[in-house]
Structures are given as C-alpha cells and as structure tokens.
Length: 503
Image 1 (cartoon, rainbow, N blue to C red):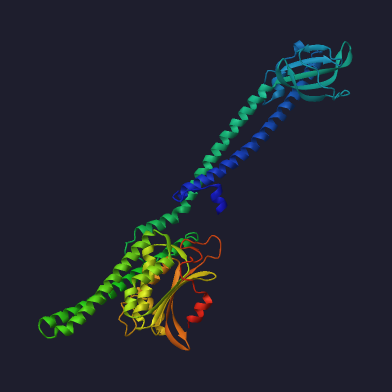
Image 2: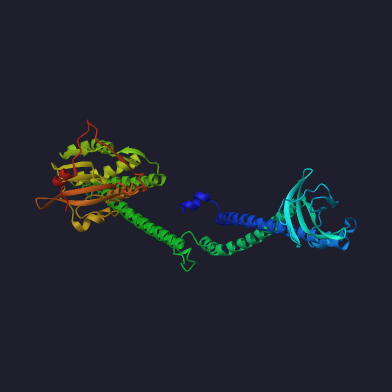
C-alpha cells in the first residue's frame, strides 16, 4: 500500500474513476512503449535482413543477365532490379563488374572491391557489407562466379550497392507505422477499460443513491448484500448509524432526565413559595428548604452548562501542552475554603506531567473528582491528590475517607443522574469526567479502598497509558519529566500502594 502511494501519489479528494484511469493508462502506456520498442527492433532487423537478401538476389540476377548477354553490361535491362526486389521499394542502385584481379569491366568504377573472403570455386556466393564512396554510406552485396570472357571462363565479381538513406527512410516508416498501431490499440483498450470501470463502480453509485434517498431521521442499517469490496464500507456505515442511534437515544434519555431533575425542584419550590405566601408554612421553616432547592437547581444548571462546554471544546479539538501537576495545585487552591470549612486534612503529591489537551477540560476533570471527594468526606477526615509516573502509564488518584460505595453501584455512578441513595449529589460530575478522560485516551475508574479489612474511602483513578509501540498515537500523552526541586516529592507506586490499597 505504501509502495503504491510512493509510486503514484494521489490526493485524498481525487475521484476513484480518474485515479484508476490514470493509473491504468500509465501502465498501458509503459507496456505499449515496451512492446513498441521490441516490435520496432524486430521489424528493423527483419527489414535489414530482407533488403540484404534482396541485394544478394539482385547481384545474382545481374550475373545471370551478364551470362545471357555475353558479358555486355550495357545490354542488361533495368527490369532485372525490379524483378529481383519484389515487394521491396526499388532504390537508386549502383553496380560494378570486375575480374578476379580487380580490373574494372563495367558499372560504377568508384565502388571498392570487397574484403578478402568467400570465393566460390565455380559456385555463386554473396557477401554483404557496408562501404563509403564519396561520403555516401552504401550497403553492398558482392557475388563471384565464372563467366565466359574471351573464349574462356574466368572468375568475375558483381557488386550491387544501395544507399543507406533508403534504409533510414524505411526505418522511419516502420517507426510511425508502429506508433499509429500502438496508439490505436491503446485508445481501444482505454475505451474498454473506461466501460469496465463504469460497470464496476455502478454498485458504489447505487449505494450512494440509496443513502441520498434516505431521510435525515432514518438511521436504520443499510443492506449488506453487496459486492465483497463494499461490504466492509457498508458494515462501517452501519456501525456509525448504530452509534448515532445510540447517541440520540442517550441524548433523549439525558434530556428526559434533565427535564425531570429541573422540573421536580421547581415544582417543590413553587409549592414552598405558595405555602409561605398564604401563611401555610412559616418562612423560617420554608426558606432553608428553598435555598437548598435553589442551590441544587443552580448546581444542576452549572453541570449542564459544563457538559455543553465540554462537547464544544471536544469538537473544536484545540489542544496544547498543559501541566497536570499545576492544574491539580490550582484546583486545590480553589477548593481551599471548602476544605477548611469541613476541616479536612488535604495532601498533594505531584510529579511533573505534561499532557496535550485543553486546560479547561483538564481542570474540569480534576475539579469534579475533587468536588466529589470533598462532598463525600466526613468532617475532620482526609483527602488528597496523587500525580505519579508508573512503569508504562501515568496516573492521577483523588482519594478520600468518605466510607466507600457499594460495589454494585460503583460503575453505574458514571451514568448521568445516577445518584446513590442518601446522596445529595446531582449525578453528572462523574459522567463529565469519563467523557473528558476518553477524549484524552485515558480511563477513569472508582475503587473502594480497604484498610485493616474495612472500606474507608474511594479512590478515583485516571490513567494515561504510555504507548509501547512505535507509530502509536501519542497526541494526548506528551511526556513525563522529573519533579522540580521546589515541588512536593512524588510518592512512589509502592508507597502509595501501601497507604491506599484497593479492593
């Protein structure tokens, strides 16, 4: 796959049809050039061999004509050349006749005698070679035989020469003949390929039309009875539709729960106000209840606004380097008055840890966990934050001495508006925490902490797993560094494990 993209890089928005046509056209062009080169080479060799044999036949025919005309070169008809050439184009030929000693007997006196070579003892033998006369390159065929001269048979040499330019013209004609045939063949094949591609892409167009005809509210799955190449796409689309349907169902449930959570306290508040106005309930008795309802409604509204802002920031995805240890320290400062009011023993142990995320989101994650810990801690109890580096992960633990939660309830606490009995919480904080943690490729879990065989509190644990293989996404886990000298020393995994064991 990577090799294909390196050989033929394309943009993501390039149409598949165009990409396939360009790719196939390039491959066919390469094959046509290769085939044309081999065909041209073979055709030229065939043409050269054919013209050499034609020259040899002309020389032999000329020799026979000399024998018929009693060695008189002036009486040889020009038709000898055309008859022997056959289908070969008749060129501007030159000839020379000489005896064994090289004495000129007739024809073109400028032609040179051939190299010493084949001499037939009464047999006709042809020798073909290249020669240059007055700057002209010639292809010469020479034939030796005995001829009756002056009442006795003597060996003679007949040479027939053809200008090399005639062969260059023949090569030029061969070249353009091959180019025209290859171009015509390429056009026909590309036209057939276009038709095949159109037929092959028709199921994709059918799927496109089917999706276009759907109403926006229709999230039913798409039929998977399609070509095998489209099945993974259709399955992925169905998974997306199912996830969208689940998200819509969750949103509807959330809106129903949120409206119920808002409508109930408002109805109670209206009843209390009416009772106070009509003197049915003393103001001293109803006012604290009203304030409590208003505080709860305000908290719910703030949580809903927080969820809306979380969704907005997650969609924007504008991440930057954020120090988790600094965020933890700032949150501790913000909650200092509330911690002091409940006389809680607070501790912060933080290793320097940098994440790629949004500062507000990370702060909201820590705030919700610390707020829950403070809310469930008893007066005079203890809570703390630990930020530490383990072997293959980074971890933040927010712990408290609130007495723990039933094991059956722990996981359901991350569901919106799921509040344990007897709790005055709203039930959105942990849901927001999990949403933020998942956006940072992290996990958030709750564990009951056991000391001396008894549940004494809850650990809220957020883990960022360090990538173990090259090429994995490290966007949200930017890096770990040693703690600064002026910062609180980080507790080791063993020390924290001994102090805060989990069930």
